[in-house]
Length: 254
Image 1 (tube, helix red, strand yellow):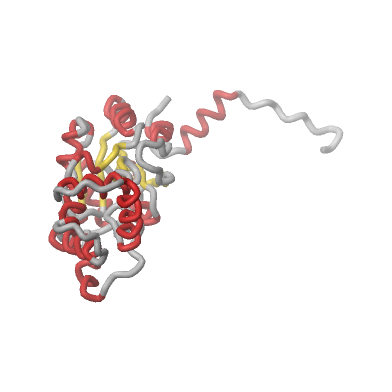
Image 2: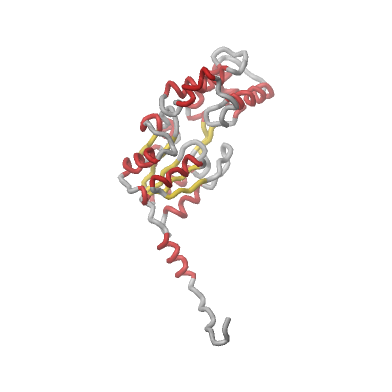
């Protein structure tokens, strides 16, 4: 620094906060992915135990865990992608998030590739997706949605899914905190196609540039192409916090 140069003046903390706030786009709507963001499917062994009970069979936990491992490899809705999709299921698999019959057919078909020795197990496993007990909302979900509602931020759920998740939100007492649902099987488009994000913003009456998409995958990050801001969170196991509350730092002033 030259001898004659003035020492830099300290910047007041308030000025920094004001500058940061000014550089951030105002958020009028928060768009949320469902699975892996707001809720997680139940633990695999609990999934198998419950489905077996529905078929009139009581499994030992060790057997249920071993069976769950095989079913996860085959492909579980809400779980890892299947290790292999049999050619006979390829068309259903490709359309699984666009048509309810394809979603059910793909996942029951994958489950049937595992010889569990329990009649009706594949259908019972799928039915767990459709009931509230088959899912676990993340610990911060209710508090985050409530805070957004109080802050005047509109909320939509944007999901690649082949069945109606509204009854789940109603059962959890969260339906009054969601203004719209853009579900792929109803919209006819899947994330990361920008059209599904545009549809969600249209439902809310909000410009995409005033919307924040919150998810846990690259497909959710596709909302950038629709003009939305994006926050990608880590997927967490059932019952464990996934950082959802950080949405409030971006969406709410003050």
